[in-house]
Length: 148
Image (cartoon, rainbow, N blue to C red):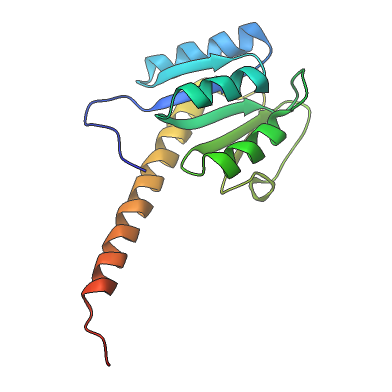
């Protein structure tokens, strides 16, 4: 996983079947500095994921039409794209963060859109801190002389 170039916006894929809810989320996230892609269901989202390896976060509703719901999509992302963070939202289902695959997060609807952008930014920042610390720890461990 490589960090985006400086001054390159993080890419968020918003997956929401309700047009106006999706457009509102896209508008707010764009105005908070993210590059935002969108999909109306999990099938469209999977096509976008295949085409765009630079996605940092998938922000998905739970209930959507089609063969996969948002939790199925979250599981798919966790298995196929473990470097992508997942945030699941719903106004009808309450989930604990622990039920979202691969360290995902849940945000209940109705949400304050500006809060979503702040939360996504913090998650991305925390992920990079972990990656950088992990690299430092691996490098430090490799530099310790063997006792053999």
